[in-house]
Length: 282
Image (cartoon, rainbow, N blue to C red; front, side):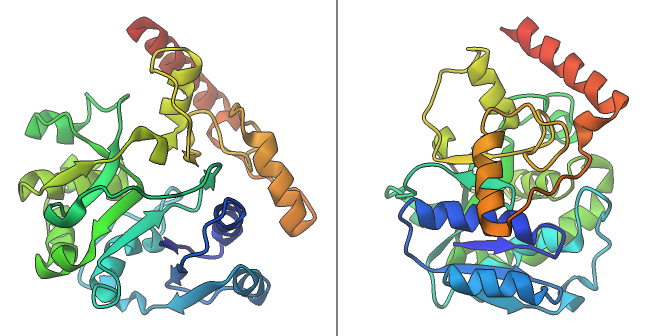
């Protein structure tokens, strides 16, 4: 199991790892970064039994990747890791820093030997993406929680093929690495394993459960995203924000907040549009 972080999201990753350990996971956890991590964070990772590795960002030197306030170069690192750990681990689970494990993470035997990758599909707000229209393929994985077949990923040269595809198809990319991943999977006709939704209950999905649009499921991994705000945003509508902030206070002895998508008028109007759109679907 691994995370890819920089100093902007390392505190969130520590909270996620704490929730993972607190729910009984005693296996190996690795954190990878392209930057030096502050000692205060490394000390907390050590206490949680996490191995930290700093990699050279030169691995991306041949690619022109979209980097902005929504994603750093580190965000693309998740696709490099399976190739370099394939000799040690047959499979690996990647978790975004903005996740919270709220139940025991006991991965069932998904039968991944014949599949390149596993993930939970996005269900909302994707039908108008250029990528979906171009390929006419409704299966679009959320990239926040991904299960990799490491040896097959390395053997198929997926890291390089994926980033070659992204460099050549920028017009089809809206959601950064997530569109890049799905475009690569479509183009190369890769075998994808759809994982149970409880392994990545992202914002749209959680909210749709509250509105009774989607059948209720007991989440194992909650994935915070901008749709209803994240617990470290000034404005957050997620029901689990207080559970998250309680862990934040325990680990860091303070609350820290950043402006999020719901903190400005444009973001809040977009939320209302999407909210009524979901009610219309209902």
